[in-house]
Length: 303
Image (cartoon, rainbow, N blue to C red; front, side, top):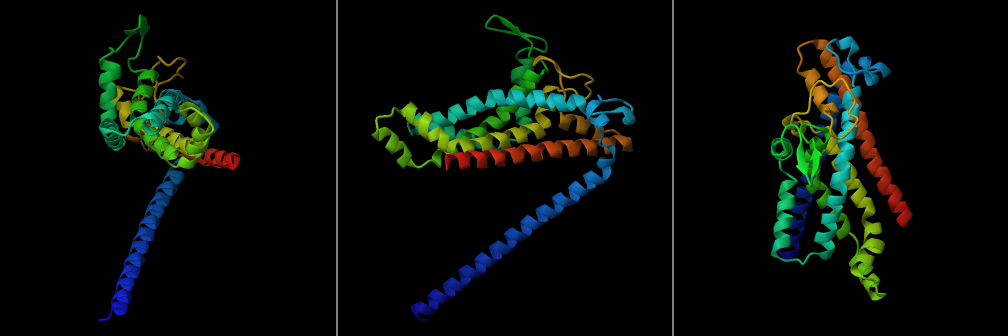
């Protein structure tokens, strides 16, 4: 066999492998889309009939016809809001330090490995950590920090801190990838005109990395919104007939309320769980759409 014949044979094998891979990837994509479509159709079929303003404005009840989603919606708003307050500065700050300031030595490599591993840890383990760190260690009622009595307990604050631990590695990784995507020529140009490292990061690198950072942050908060296991572990309530007024109040969340209704034997509560899933899906789709809009808006301004 001549060299040209071997080249043609190797080229044919590569093309066949590429074709097979594309078909497998396309089949997997369509399988996921079909399964998701079946799930959404089933949820809509069971829950759309219960969707109304009363459902959104009523508190949970032992009577299915009077039960609503209000406490769960506002509990999720409180929890995710404080999760964003805690996680965004910490995550972006850590990413800036690791990518722009830290010396690329053994310690940084160890930190990178730990962060990457923490991003794949099951959420139930974060729930156990939150139970130990924010509930039991500080006590079920109050604890004193810097002379101030703080009632962590099973409050919105404890839930937000636990969700912060969950999504912090995701935000750090996404922010680092956004910073890494900024061309080094931009940094060198800033240094060339006499900018300090912080001036370079603040005025040149961060504006260029903002679209990727925003996308990562919003998607991480979307994950926090849909988590159930960590909140169950720290003792978030399944029945709450009030809206939290402070971060120290007890709370529930949309996934926990859905879980509560789905675990009941009455068929009516199963329909309510499907309705709650519709509301949660709408909120999650809205947050993902917001991430895309923010990214496109930031990119258009940068252009």
